[in-house]
Amino acid sequence: MTETAEATATATAGGDVGGRRASLWGDAWLELRRRPLFWVAAALLAFMVVLALFPSLFTDLGPNKGCVLSSSKGGSTAGHPFGFDTQGCDLFSQVVHGARPTILIGLAVTVGSLVISIVFGTLAGFYGGLLDSVIARITDIFFGLPFVLGATVILVAFPDHGVGAMCLVLVVLGWTTMTRIMRSQVISVKSMDYVRAARALGAGDLRIMFRHILPNAIAPVFVVSMLNVGQVIAYEATLDYLGVGLQYPTVSWGLQLNVAQDYFTDFPHLLVFPALFLSVTVLSFIMLGDVLRDALDPRMR
Amino acid sequence: MWRYVVRRLIQIVPVFLGTTLLIYTLVFALPGDPVKALAGDKPLPASVLHALHERYNLDDPFVVQYGKYLGNLLTGNFGETYTGQSVASLMADRWTVTAQLAGTAWIFEMIVGIGLGVYAGLRHGRLGDTAVLGLTTLLISVPTFVVGYTAQLLFGLKLEWFPTAGTQDGWPVSYLLPGIVLGSFGLAYVARLTRTSLAENLRADYVRTATAKGMSRVRVIVRHTLRNSLIPVITYLGVDLGNLMAGSIVIEGIFNLPGIGQQVFQSIQLKEGPVVVGITTFLVLIYLLANLIVDILYGFLDPRIRYD
Image (cartoon, rainbow over all chains, first blue to last red; front, side):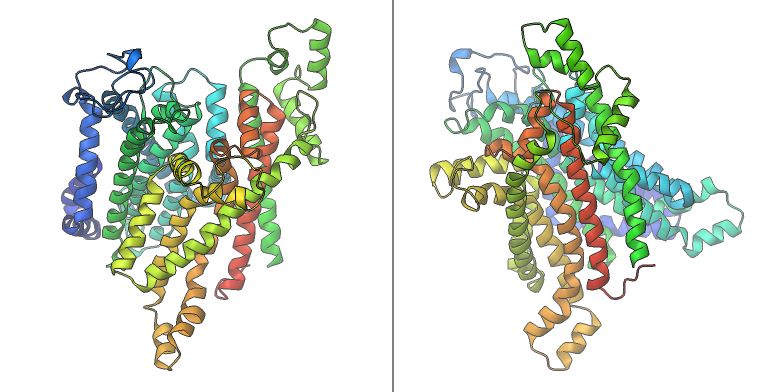
């Protein structure tokens, strides 16, 4: 949701910066407004964000609170629509509390990767030469490293990790694709006439990068970053599921699925509800990225 | 052409060194003494401990350890585990399982993905297209391990269409369900890439020309459109082969397949540095070579691309 607001803000505020930028984001917003899929994704995400920010609106119980071991793995009853988890905690309230770390990690990692990719991509694309080669080789190293394998090794090496450390690991392994896209965008924008014109008028490197190249090169990276939020959330859940991600007493959907793996054949509700919330969140981010790409890519209109 | 290949091969060297160094550093940072961990509750005699440390270069400073490891690697020696088994033979045993799994997934995502993509691309904007888009979005959104469990529960346990776990029935029977699950994510990308690229190329001038000349629709689609449209798809398939091998960590755990993914996960927990570094190096090499082959294939598929 915040991204959407941001995009709108850029679209309206960008009006006086340069005609192309304003029309690109402005057109995109007009296009987005007409797409029902955009509103579905935005509504689902708004719901998930409210879950993450204000879990107390939906449940009176705190995380891991009010658990009665005797009702362990129990099915749905009155007042407990999702049934109970292995510790006998109300599964609905646990699933509600699972939203916060998941969404926090997804957004924080994406913002972190976006910043790195913009800095590295712009520098590499703008200056070229040795700097470009060095950044390209570093990108290659991190890109070739299998994601789950690399993350598992790092997380086992540093066992006491919370949400912050998880974010760091996911950023370290996740910035490469966006950096490559940013670099190629910057290279193509760099040779545009308006950049040469600015150069001829005596603009410095920094001014050209920030005022002329960045606003015109950022759209594809922005779309990928939206799709990336969903990916990051899925990866985080995978690491939790493998037992190397977040640890108890943190409540997260991935951890709930980790616990469910031993019991799901007899108690499928343990698997179904966290998986449903997780998948819907990932799905919403991916749908949002998809409609945003369609809106920003004039070729497909 | 050859100059291009040589240049790419030279570029692989720093990436290879960087990756092994990175993983070696991380494994080096794993807390605890692997030899002590091996012994369990009973403490080892000091002399045995010393001898084992000597044998595995554990007392050397980090740079020396890495140097010795790299030296061995260049002579084709992947080192040995702390139980004395050679890493190369360990990997050889495990490798076939992962190769069969990744191969099944790859073939599945290639055939079904391109099939769905062509179908959707030809019906661009119509109901069939929307259905394929919906299905692929769903496949991308549900994490692989959730798909794995659901498929295992549904098709393995309840419907009994496929074996639930293990490799007793050999290839392909035992690998079908895990392969389909592993390939489902890539399938979605292959289908979407094929669809977009086909729909775009069908509007190209040369396609209109071919149709105007009176060629049959099948020939126009297969010879004039599909061949071009598959270039981005082939790129993705090449890169994805490496992803599939690495993705086996999750799938092999769920379906209990004794491949390198399961092995590397156990080895990380046991702090078996040589195995972890060996398998990762191996995976990275496969990935780099697959990328190189794809880039060279470009020239054959699209004569407009020239290497110089």
